[in-house]
Image (cartoon, rainbow, N blue to C red; front, side, top):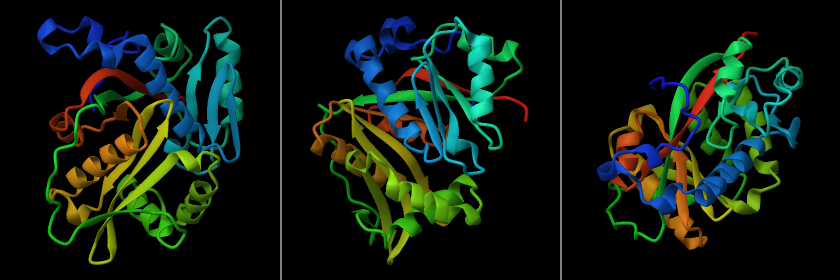
Length: 278
């Protein structure tokens, strides 16, 4: 993942050259507000131990893994010193990230670095209209994509994406517990790519705010570059259409970005991730 200059908190598409500009429907303020609301709902859903959704949006799972603890937004920088201190207090004792995206006030990145935060990486926010049909495609031989609807398959789903993320196996039971007890599980569809009765890939779709947010797209190391990610992405888009949402959105990794572009996703903004020294 590459670093970006200051100002990456803002949508990109409006400033792009005419030939590369995303359709306005994908990046105008109304669409971006729905996308970021979807992302905030998904992330704060991990806040099993603590969460806040007012002036400081944050979530604390209690897990010793930064993906599952963090700040998703501040509404204003008027009291940034106090807000930063509050965030560090609420998230003390666990690793965590501060997500700075298009819903963050201008100047958030600079305010954080001034107060000692270090920029870790940048994730492109990519969207795709679900008015477009999903091209039919044949999955790899023997592969099937299944919705995980019971607790029997959930531990294997968690084990697969946790291994891909580098999460310690000792955390898996707590991740399963948090996943199974999310308050917004009615909005969520978890998909498993199954080959020879083994989960070899995962993704999660959250249909909320008229957006299908796509998260946790992971493929087991032993099954990469075999079309599993393609099959999962196609299935996630079909879930979004079936749920009646208008947009699909995700934060792309460098490995996944070329795949998503082939599906018609375009970059409209970025998240910049920051951490404070422990």
